[in-house]
Image 1: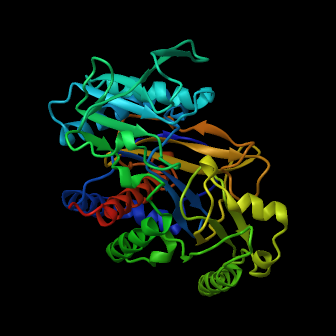
Image 2 (image 1 turned 120 degrees about the horizontal axis):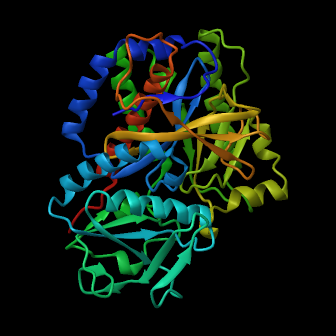
Length: 427
């Protein structure tokens, strides 16, 4: 399910996207077969980068926090997809407990929570919000800027179930990425569905596991289309035992940066690409754009000053960085007004339900846009049709965004494999 969208495009559809458009029937058949073998995460969002010669995911979030940034016209798609996801997991579900991040002062994030609650309630569920904050010891209303109010409630734990006072849910939906670890109150809930599973949280999850799974998906998909998998897949490597404060692991970092840059140069030479290759060094766990730096030469790694080392040492919740992924940088040729932009595609279950552009007027096309100063531009509906329009030109909006939806679903499929392979072994 890929909605038709309207947004200013940056030029004619390029060869890769035209190939995806031309193979739409085979792609949908292949994806349908894949979803018969693998269970998609409940939801997810994918950061894409489109350099013209390459269209690839650079990050996959399994606890998306920007539903408030979607265009309101996407609401019917969100509700329909959520119904599908819930029916597969708990067909008779009547109650759902939503557990958000502890950002009670971040009103933008809480508007995301409110939008999630609205979507889930339209599926016929009774939805209430349980807080992990110890200071929430009684029902606490929080007023939002749009005039709505969220009610945060303290949770009640029994031996194998979690709920609220007088509220026993069938399922628990986490919108908390567990960066600070898995709280005891969430462990051992054998009688309830926890979505996504606990090992999807950053206490356990690693980006390198996701992109290793994506390697396999990209290779299979590339064979289907007869393309070079590099066109949809960024190179990467990993360094463990890193300590930026102590300058530990710098040799590993420098050699891996050199190796990835060498592979990129070979591809640029093969395709006569004149851009300057770069890599992105980032924490192998975590989100919010923390612990991220752009590198064009290995010497930059060994020459980090104290401020740069401090920036790379810590991620969300003050967690220290000990392992990093060195990922091929993908330039973004998208622009919205005067800002460099990258599309972020949202999915529920196996369906694309919308997206937005992350825009930053103070960053370049080879820099991380998930940084202070960014803003979001919702992608707008054109029609309710779910697939590309063969009657329109290749660069018509529905067809440009079909390619984005396909690559996003490949990342969602990779997340399915990743979660299968990293699931804890039951005793």
